[in-house]
Image (cartoon, rainbow, N blue to C red):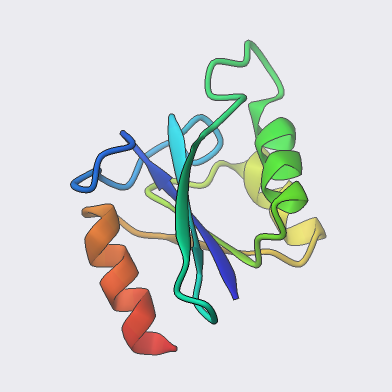
Length: 104
Protein backbone atom coordinates (compact mmCIF):
# COMPACT_ATOMS: atom_id res chain seq x y z
CA UNK A 1 0.00 0.00 0.00
CA UNK A 2 1.24 3.47 -0.81
CA UNK A 3 0.31 6.14 1.73
CA UNK A 4 0.67 9.92 1.44
CA UNK A 5 0.93 11.80 4.73
CA UNK A 6 0.42 15.58 4.56
CA UNK A 7 3.36 17.26 6.32
CA UNK A 8 4.12 20.77 7.54
CA UNK A 9 7.85 20.61 6.67
CA UNK A 10 10.32 18.27 5.00
CA UNK A 11 12.08 17.63 8.32
CA UNK A 12 11.99 14.32 10.20
CA UNK A 13 10.03 15.90 13.08
CA UNK A 14 7.33 17.41 10.84
CA UNK A 15 3.76 17.56 12.05
CA UNK A 16 0.79 16.29 10.09
CA UNK A 17 -0.52 19.26 8.09
CA UNK A 18 -4.03 20.36 8.95
CA UNK A 19 -4.94 21.30 5.37
CA UNK A 20 -4.56 18.14 3.30
CA UNK A 21 -4.77 19.59 -0.20
CA UNK A 22 -2.60 22.60 0.68
CA UNK A 23 -0.01 20.76 2.76
CA UNK A 24 3.49 22.06 2.02
CA UNK A 25 4.83 18.49 1.70
CA UNK A 26 3.73 14.89 1.42
CA UNK A 27 5.59 11.91 2.82
CA UNK A 28 5.03 8.96 0.51
CA UNK A 29 5.34 5.66 2.35
CA UNK A 30 5.28 2.28 0.63
CA UNK A 31 4.27 -0.21 3.31
CA UNK A 32 5.37 -3.20 1.22
CA UNK A 33 8.92 -2.08 0.49
CA UNK A 34 9.35 0.19 3.51
CA UNK A 35 10.64 2.97 1.26
CA UNK A 36 9.63 6.55 1.90
CA UNK A 37 10.08 9.81 0.06
CA UNK A 38 9.26 13.41 1.06
CA UNK A 39 8.14 15.64 -1.81
CA UNK A 40 6.87 19.21 -1.95
CA UNK A 41 3.22 19.64 -2.81
CA UNK A 42 3.18 21.43 -6.17
CA UNK A 43 -0.27 22.93 -5.50
CA UNK A 44 0.12 24.08 -1.89
CA UNK A 45 -0.08 27.72 -3.01
CA UNK A 46 -2.76 27.30 -5.71
CA UNK A 47 -5.24 30.17 -5.81
CA UNK A 48 -8.17 27.83 -6.40
CA UNK A 49 -8.88 24.21 -7.17
CA UNK A 50 -6.24 22.87 -4.78
CA UNK A 51 -8.40 19.87 -3.86
CA UNK A 52 -8.67 18.59 -7.43
CA UNK A 53 -5.07 19.42 -8.26
CA UNK A 54 -3.63 17.82 -5.11
CA UNK A 55 -5.74 14.71 -5.70
CA UNK A 56 -4.45 14.49 -9.28
CA UNK A 57 -0.86 14.75 -8.00
CA UNK A 58 -1.41 11.98 -5.45
CA UNK A 59 -3.21 9.79 -8.00
CA UNK A 60 -0.25 10.19 -10.36
CA UNK A 61 2.00 8.91 -7.56
CA UNK A 62 -0.11 5.75 -7.15
CA UNK A 63 -1.37 6.55 -3.65
CA UNK A 64 -3.91 4.23 -1.97
CA UNK A 65 -4.44 6.22 1.24
CA UNK A 66 -4.08 9.86 2.33
CA UNK A 67 -3.57 11.05 5.90
CA UNK A 68 -4.01 14.69 6.93
CA UNK A 69 -5.29 16.69 9.88
CA UNK A 70 -8.31 17.83 7.88
CA UNK A 71 -9.40 16.59 4.48
CA UNK A 72 -11.72 19.14 2.91
CA UNK A 73 -14.86 18.18 0.99
CA UNK A 74 -13.50 18.78 -2.53
CA UNK A 75 -10.22 16.98 -1.83
CA UNK A 76 -12.07 14.12 -0.15
CA UNK A 77 -14.54 13.74 -3.01
CA UNK A 78 -11.75 13.60 -5.62
CA UNK A 79 -9.83 11.03 -3.61
CA UNK A 80 -12.86 8.85 -2.90
CA UNK A 81 -13.90 9.00 -6.58
CA UNK A 82 -10.53 7.40 -7.32
CA UNK A 83 -10.83 4.73 -4.60
CA UNK A 84 -8.31 6.41 -2.30
CA UNK A 85 -8.98 6.09 1.43
CA UNK A 86 -8.90 9.29 3.52
CA UNK A 87 -7.94 9.36 7.20
CA UNK A 88 -7.77 12.37 9.49
CA UNK A 89 -5.03 12.26 12.13
CA UNK A 90 -2.97 14.74 14.11
CA UNK A 91 0.48 14.55 15.67
CA UNK A 92 3.87 14.14 14.08
CA UNK A 93 4.44 12.38 10.80
CA UNK A 94 6.73 9.88 12.53
CA UNK A 95 3.96 8.99 15.02
CA UNK A 96 1.56 8.36 12.14
CA UNK A 97 4.15 6.25 10.31
CA UNK A 98 4.70 4.16 13.46
CA UNK A 99 0.96 3.71 13.93
CA UNK A 100 0.40 2.72 10.30
CA UNK A 101 3.37 0.32 10.35
CA UNK A 102 1.84 -1.45 13.34
CA UNK A 103 -1.44 -1.90 11.45
CA UNK A 104 0.13 -3.65 8.47
